[in-house]
Length: 116
Image (cartoon, rainbow, N blue to C red; front, side, top):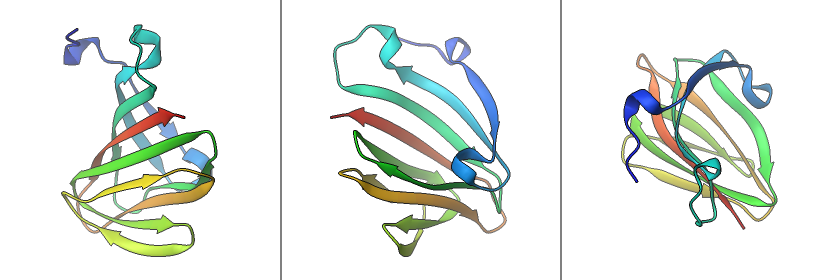
């Protein structure tokens, strides 16, 4: 299967999970595309400086973030850590997380949600 960029659905969301500002999201792959993996969604996410995704848990899914560009504050179960390009995170098993774009450039990352 090949999915071309022009076939991907994109949208802008506001105050995601109680976060600040807006988030641009392009859905790269999703479960609806009839493959058998436990993948729920794979998306490219953009957060302008100061924008964030609010704190939320992952009880029945796991979520991976991979940072492509920009810097971020990542809240990992109450611990705050700074992320930069090349860093990856995983949250699951009832853990919580949030992420906020830092600095002068847009945070660009890949987010993958996996079903248990």
